[in-house]
Image (cartoon, rainbow, N blue to C red; front, side, top):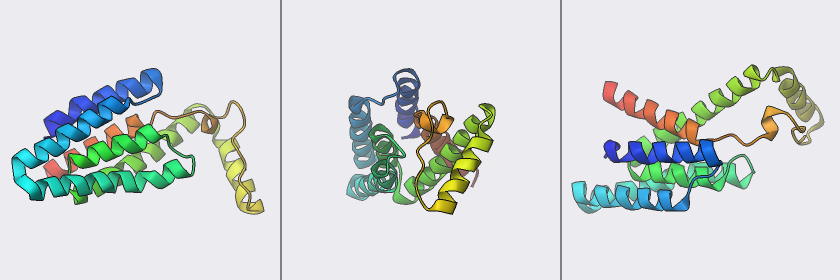
Length: 164
């Protein structure tokens, strides 16, 4: 099934990098392929695993969307990835994607030379207990193509499972 997931993830990655959006048709196609493949390879138990994996990916990313830290396409893409996996693997892929997203964001902040600004803003937020929006021009104010992190996290999970 991973061979079916890879081209879908790459298409989402290219779309997110190029247009800053992940098409719903791509995500829906991926979910249909995943759940159909789950059913064909393992029957109803595998289909149930795919549905639960989808809920894990969706459910863990949804709060990030609700608080404005992520776009809806990223949440749907993680749900699609989860549909290809078991719930346990979906949890690992989601966690790895979150770690990859943090690493990518920190790398962007460092490359842009804005670590001092970021630390100052978080220090002030902690000290005052209020949320301070990122200023115009800060890396934190620009949308991040999170499909990069989802691809990296999913790949690491796949590699990890192959080694283990």
